[in-house]
Picture (cartoon, rainbow over the protein chains, first blue to last red):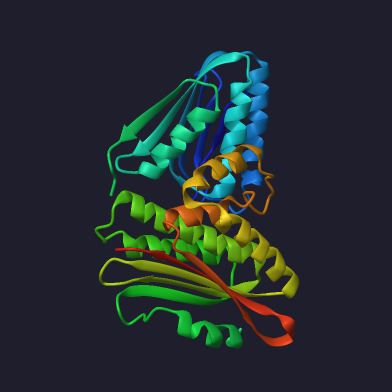
Length: 125
Length: 173
């Protein structure tokens, strides 16, 4: 199985899903018009990765902001990992004073039955 | 398009007070991107909180992407007053059938008590249908939350049984 690496654009995040490191990272912004199209390869990769029973994995979500259709796709991605036969931990990053992104992390943490760590980062503004 | 621009002109804030921009014409993916970049450049120097800046930009994205998905062309206006208050406006021509559907969706979204909005958003997030064109009605809910319930819409009758759908979002200073 190969890593999934996708460079970010002004509308889509950097994707670094690394097999050997067992680390899935999304960085940037997620505001594509068609989120399903963007997230489908990520969901497929996660399915295959989960099938390999990877053991302990880390998911890092470092999004500046995301649109509402991406929020549904993120939920799908985290749900797939939740149902994976592995020990997954989610690290949800939010910018200092960004209460909405913090709250979004808390919302996902309440729904997804995985250990969630909310990580505050310094403000870039 | 001329009629659309003319009929919504009175609804627009006065651009000679504060800063802003407006776009009238066909909405394309590249247009959405340019409008977002302009808005980011406009709000960057302002002393807004991180939350306010991001809420404003998220709403701009939702509005412009709605125009892209549901209308071939439309009008979009972004305005920031000297006192720091801001507004976003979008308008596009819709059919009577679209008006009926939109009114139902808006009624449904706005009939939820503001305090109960979060629970409904979470329910939609988990159980709502997801399509390539949108996020199961989450956009309206998110815009309502981002503006602290300052989301207004109206349907202005125009030619041939069509309507101009106008949505205005206000952000206090």
